[in-house]
Image (cartoon, one colour):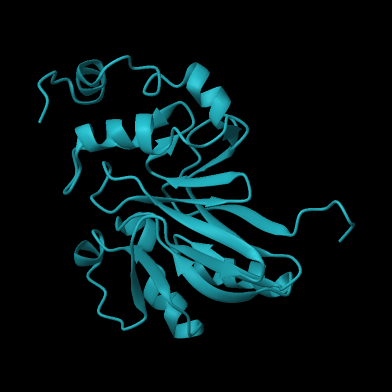
Length: 221
C-alpha cells in the first residue's frame, strides 16, 4: 500500500436471483473485514475473502428481509463472529443465535483502523440501517440509485422513509459514494450529490408529495 492509498477495503459483489449487492468492508492493513448482508451464495463471499487473505470479523445487516439475511446461519457455521442488526429489526429476523448484537444508531464497529458507523434509517423496515465508512455509504434498501426502498411490506413506513432520506441522510457530504443494496441501475455506485440532483424521491419538496409519489396516498400517517 502506497503512502496515499486508502486503507479502506470495499468489495461489491452481485449475488443471487434478486440482484443483491453483498459487500466486504474492512482494512487492507489489518486484513480484517465485515460481510454486509450475507445472503445467497455465502461460499462465494467467503472464498473472495480467503483469496485476498481477509479474516471475517463480523456481519453487518442493513435490514431483516430474507434476500439480505438468508445466508447468516451458513456464515455462522463457517465463522465465529458477531452479527450486528439494528435493535428494531431483531424481532423480525427470527434468529436465536447469541451472536446477534442489537445496534443503536451512531454505534461504531472497527475492522483494524477502519471505523464503520451504523446509521438508523427506518422506513423500508423499522430497523433499516446504513453503514458509513471512509466517505462511502452502504445504503441497503433505504436508498437506491434513482429510487428508494418500498414501504408496503411488514414494518414499512413511508413517512419514516421520507425523514430518513431528507433528514437522517442529509448530513452526508455530496462526495459520499452511495453503495446500494441491489444492482438496479446502469452503474453500481454513484454519489450523494448526483442523487440529490436526479433521484425523484430526494427531489420531493414535501412529505405530502413524497407520500403520494411513493404510495399513491397523500394523507400523512
